[in-house]
Length: 488
Image 1 (tube, rainbow, N blue to C red):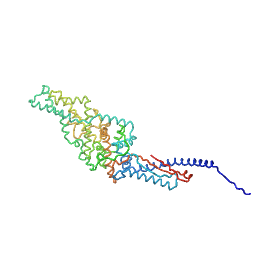
Image 2 (tube, helix red, strand yellow; image 1 turned 45 degrees about the horizontal axis):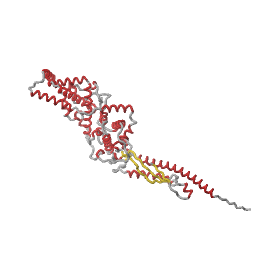
Image 3 (cartoon, rainbow, N blue to C red; image 1 turned 90 degrees about the vertical axis):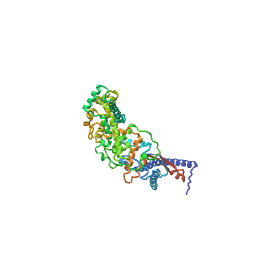
Image 4 (cartoon, rainbow, N blue to C red; image 1 turned 120 degrees about the vertical axis):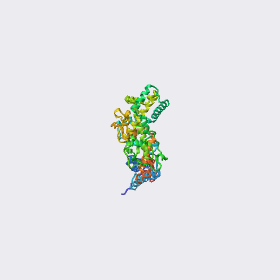
């Protein structure tokens, strides 16, 4: 006997099953949403890393700075071009995922560069900080503190020419001599006559006259034997970075750098830039550190300007040494009396004494610079054993071919340049450093459009994606509102 069985589901049970299914599928979609969010993160990061991997290789190879060329070797900077490259790579990766029928399929809705920094931003602050970041692991704390003390000590010595002191003293002496001649050669006292006779008999040399004659000589001829071999390079007439309006990024830049960062920049300068002591023949200029200091288009002018500043620094240091050495101070005083004692005027004698000290320091400085340019070291403040010129025998101790004594614990020519650069304004320092970088990179084939204000140092993008809900759609047999995922 056949019996038909009928089943039934109550409304309550049907609704309960629907709620349970909704809950389960909701959990599945929530879990998928979490995974898709992570995938969007990964996709964005991968695309950005791929973009930044196209850093300018010559800038890295020559100067160890990682930057993306915002012009891609062309003349014009374009963030739209960069965004287009980034968008293409994201969409290509997403398309591959979609082809595999992955549950992680996404669609890129929008992409925007929210901010970016160029190497030249902040009046060169970005550039200086990037260099400091690179150099901070290459210098020990002990060395950094030692260098800082040297820079502080050198910074206290203001560039002050001895020329005014020499001219003042020499003029006072000449006026006194003319006055004596107008009065028939009579001196102020019997003591003055005796001094005059002693000077005439001993043929005392006047350091101030010798110094003034030296100052009339061409500086480079005075300190360099091979001055004919000085580089004749000059930059072309195209606008340098320091002469044009620059592209500006959208990110804010802090003002000023700490003393540690400035110290790192100067050490970087010594490692990656040439100078008279370590010449780079393949660069746009041969004397690169001298260019950073002086900023002329012509190598010769930069070298002359650097030597002038170095000579002034050495003059101040040598005057400081003479004034602190009682023996040398006594020699200068005796010579002043020998030259100006006939006036019997303490004021004139004192002025002549200071003029002699200035002239003595100047001639010693010339020999210091000769030694530095020849690769020797010179102490910032000399000791007695390091002194070269004898003021009582100038003809023998100062000659055009002589140089100062080498000091093993002293500073090199490049160290003195860095000491002078320590006091340079940050904007000027950064600008002239980037000038040299840009000009050198333009020497490389296919790099003639290189501009440092096109180099992107950092950038930030915001991407927005969307993905459709899958499990709810299966449950309700219709597409519901899509879930959007964003990455910033």
